Amino acid sequence: MERKPHVVAIPYPAQGHVIPMMKVAQYLAENGLKVTFVNTEFNHQRVTKALSQTGNIHELVNLVSIPDGLESWEDRNEHGKLAEASVKIMPKELENLIQEMNRTESDDIITCVLVDFYMAGILPVVEKFGIKRAAFLPAPVALLALTLNVQKLVDDGIVDADGTPLTNQPIQLAPLMPKMSPMNFAWACFPDPSMGKPIFQSIIQNNESSKLIQRLICNSSTELEQPALNFIPNCSPIGPLLPSSHRLGKSAGHFWPEDSTCLAWLDQQPPNSVVYVAFGSFTVFDAIQFEELALGLESTNRPFLWVVRQDTNRDNEIEEAYPAGFAERVKNRGKMVGWSPQEQVLSHPAVACFISHCGWNSTVEGIGNGVPLLCWPYFADQFLNRSYIVDHWGVGLGLEKDETGIVRKEEIRVNVERIFDDEGYKSRAVKLQAKIFSSAHEGGSSHLNFHSFINWIKDN
Ligand code: UDP
Image 1 (cartoon, rainbow, N blue to C red):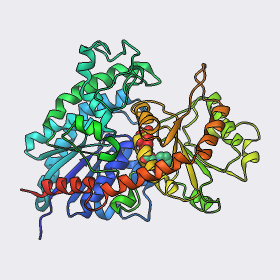
Image 2: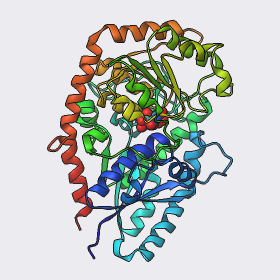
Image 3: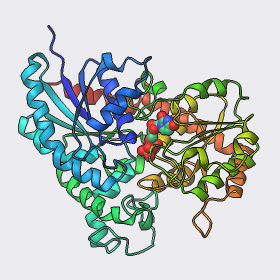
């Protein structure tokens, strides 16, 4: 029997990391590699429960799990705690898993471990086994550039040794890269400021372990991030990872079941008419902001599709969170779902624009479908991504908070109108879409990089 090179893929245990790593896994499997995908036990249960019956991911990729170091009742949305616990326990768990797999699957012993870049703490274990060590970055390269340079930020007096900003002056790591305000650095802008320090420390530790990475790939492209890629030349872009660009099947790895009724609803809407509203997997709103958003969408007088996760509203049960009479008033043009098949939604001709928290996946999926964005960043790399969308690519507008920290309904209405009225946003988004497609398609730079990576894994 032919021996297949065997890759073990390990994402960081969050939704925005699992979905793109699953796409990489799918592509590797379709190109002749055996792939084992390691989720945490907590996420494995959610992923297998939510897995669409129509996809063939089970046939392509072997799904297994290891513990994340937290108790079953602990909150996985506390990033600092989750990062700390998983870095402690997952290397040992992975070591056991590799030993077990090499013992029982003698035909397909493990050739390469592919970790999420921010899980590089696992690599010392991999080095012990003499297995190839690769990493995948599901975030912008500009974020990588920032986090790899934290010591320089400390030395230059921009942040203190805990990562707390000491100045408000925006910085630029290299010419043409996005300007970043220290208050918006990925670790410094969490709603709970106590998370900044542990996350900053985990970045420093991760940088140390990342020296063991032999190959680094990322979900980006030269058209999107050339200046940042010049700055970090060993990071090889293979993206954007989109079903259309990589001929991937339906995306897998979702933590919630997708409500596909919204696709039939979209079919009923005129082309280029719908405002799609989704804030990824973590963003939460307080009662005032939630209500203001609902009223803002209502005031646009346009059809809208709004993803309202069960845990979206911090203060209320979701059923009680909507303004009085809202559901009745918008029933003919508003659709709310708990979790959408987002990539299918964004590729639907009825969708005109996307109100987004600017997670990197949502950003890439938006422009990958030529959809202009209205940016409402929340934390982590999302402010940086807004800067790309608004200042660098010109494919969207920012939504601003008032002096009390609320994005008001009028702000939403006015900016939705601006996106519809100025065709420049759509035409730039469509142009950018065409460019990134050409790099991801056969013969393009991302495509060549991906295949060079696959050949590296296959080479003895
Ligand atoms: N997503 C989805 N349905 C939804 C909302 C989000 O499938 O209703 C997917 C989205 O397509 C993306 C991921 O969840 O692939 C969210 O990742 P992102 O980086 O945008 O945000 P995060 O959740 O990490 O903040």
